[in-house]
Image 1 (cartoon, rainbow, N blue to C red):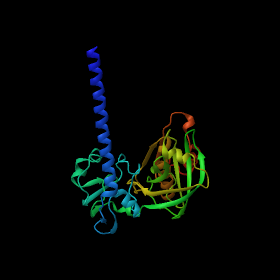
Image 2 (image 1 turned 30 degrees about the vertical axis):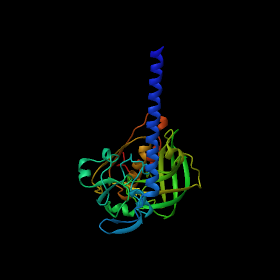
Image 3 (image 1 turned 180 degrees about the vertical axis):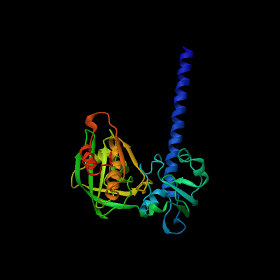
Image 4 (image 1 turned 90 degrees about the vertical axis):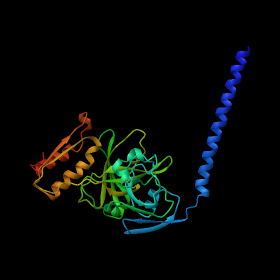
Length: 305
């Protein structure tokens, strides 16, 4: 009897200790969050971009990513600041503070040595100097409306956005845009390749596969004609070789055909005699789309196979 009661007493004491310890940690975490939100006052901070090409001032305390977006500097960030896409890399020359554990898995040794950071993780607590690729300074925010929705397969849709403001886009074959979609915790961004050719400057067309539970693809698949949409772009470092003597080989499948469609039509709009091969992979004949379009194109351009 004593042993049973003793063990019960020890168990109760252990449970009580665990509850108290957990309560202390939760309380400290809440206190630190409150202190960070209300007590930490970093005042006005200045961010110098690309050796002074741009200079802006803001209240410190937020992330570098949000500071850049507030000042219409749109760098890639596929998951909107969750620290998991590794796209929002910038070079911090001065003022970024120590490298954080949440950044190190996404940075190479060379990047860490050269000051590359994840903008979504770096807090603006003091004056900073940063560098980003020059082409990102030309990324724009677009307002548009849905002008067309077409079912390509059982789970892939073609959605066309008519641009309103600005009313034209200039992009390279293979680039992408970041569409803003409503999520359970606020607005999120998701990256989708542009499928419309570069000469169609007043529209942006996407080919999107529905991902079960996917915030972005679910949002896009439920869009109707006339719905407003917002996105930023263009992004992407892909560059099509502009030597007309170089033969092109395009390989893709499913929604991966989006950038390939842009590439193929852009090629034959500019270089009528350029050679191009297309390999389209899919699991069943029901997953084939755009085949009639490509067959028609091959009749017009015999060097398109």
